[in-house]
Length: 255
Image (tube, rainbow, N blue to C red; front, side, top):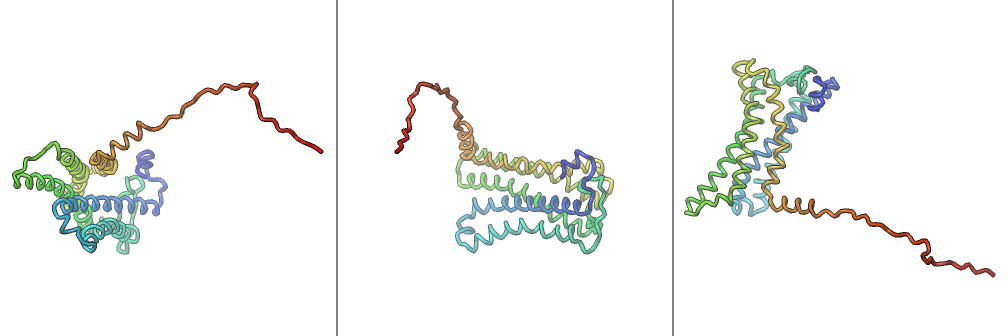
């Protein structure tokens, strides 16, 4: 949908249903991705430092793993379905010359729009950054407190992965969130010409995350490389046809 807009420079098809669907998918999936990444960043602390206390029983696994995952998936879908698709408080007015058809009507409600940005965007983005940064600090501090030498070569992959993940959200989400909050509360024209570019930046996150996840699984990467290298190739060989070859003959017997 975004590529269609950037190619045509306008929204097509220019209908209310298409704009509602586009806005709903964009906002709800972004929220689901942010909340999932935030909870996974927190869950790493539990897995590394409190695995025996937190995941030793089935009901604890439901509380600390399955239920938060389900919440992260359905929260954005239900919340934006209410305020975008079936909003009972206002009517959406779309501009088909703008990305995402402009803004949904709930932006006119200052309290609701600020809650959306603070809870659905700012909170998970900051959580991802802080959780990944503090995880590295906790690992290093625990080893130093036990008077163990920090093997940087061993932890280099983890540090690099967490640093890249934090930098992605810091560099691609926080500028958009900060600029939008300033426009909503202080100066409406603040960086208005750069806002559309900032809205495009978070699309790079789902493109880079699979590569980051694969980089943390060296065994899987090596297996994939071996499969690619050991892929069997079709061999073509010549066959000599001998016209004088003896063929089995069928003798028909009659009465």
